[in-house]
Amino acid sequence: MPQRLTRTTPRLTNRLRRWALACVLLLLTAAGAQADEIERNGQPLNVTIVGVDDGELVYRPPTGGERRIPLDEVGPLKLDTDPKFFDAYELFVAEDYRGAVGAFTEVIEESSAAWVRNYARFYLAQALDQRGEPTDAAEVYLAIARDGADPYFLSQPPVASLEDANEAQRGRIRTEIMDVIEDTEGPSRAALQGYLRLVVGDGQMPDIDPAPGTPGAGDGPDRTASAVILPNEIWDLLDEDDAEERWAAVNLLIEGDPAGAIEAITPWLRNPSALPQKLFILGRAQLAIAEETGERDDYLDAGLTFMRLVVHYKPGTTSLIAPARLEVALVHRAIGREDLYQKLLFDDGLSLSFADDPETYPQYYRRYYQIIDEPLPTPDDEEPEE
Image 1: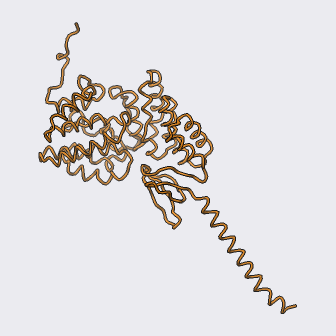
Image 2 (image 1 turned 60 degrees about the vertical axis):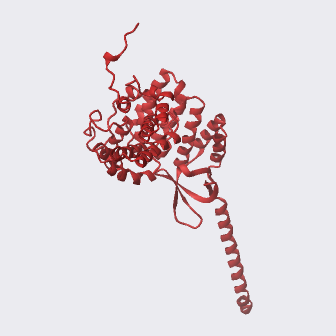
């Protein structure tokens, strides 16, 4: 008997080893089947998504380590724990906004991951916006801010539906924004300020206290006395708590150092957060250099930067589009294309945003008359009523 035990023990051990190895392989296969799938540049990747941070999707590939993709470059997501997200996304891209509203609402109600819920809100707000539901879209959009989500999810404010919103709806949205904005800071606060401006108009913007802890808030340059005319949306950046570092380019531009402004803003261009504001600052600094050198290539650099803003952002998503188009007109005049200058400024309706309208763009009202080389109108210039 002892000999028999001695002979069978190795066989039993080998069986156990084979069984253990099979279990390990089974577990690994199961783990692989549970991976998330992302799409980048049209190529699907099996990964494990960690979450969202600073405008980027954070994930782990099968090879290990941690990688990031800017959210602007991320395609459809297939989430193992939230399979309904992909179905909702497909409805959204197919412009079935009614179906997308219901599907993304289910994702928000069922998901246990905060970043997934806010990603779903990001699309839900846009779907409601496209359906012409401004107050519902605003409520979802502001829920993103209340949740302290990554500022990227506030990069597409629901403004398409504002075109047909009545005064009561705009007033309600204004009240809800004001209820949330005091509890935000940094890029999120700037996004809400931009949304509020699009809801009420530049001339009706309420006074908003700087974010808590903002050093020297309210002691910055006088925007009305500045030699460099900038839109209010750019001036508002100086009220952010990290303005001294993040928006140093604005102060350098105001101080007459456009080269320094370009150097300061360039590293921040890699982050898609607040990209319209960054592009405008870069273009304005490039234009300042062009006006110093008179070189055609310098004007073209500025014009191309402003055109990125005009082409890639829809009207209503930022108040910087009309000012950027105004600067593009100036560039065309500087490079000898008077025909395009005239078309952009007078034939394409752009002048309606500035001429005889000091309320919509208070700062750029001055810039408009500066560019067309005419004095600012005074009340005495108004024609008498017949």
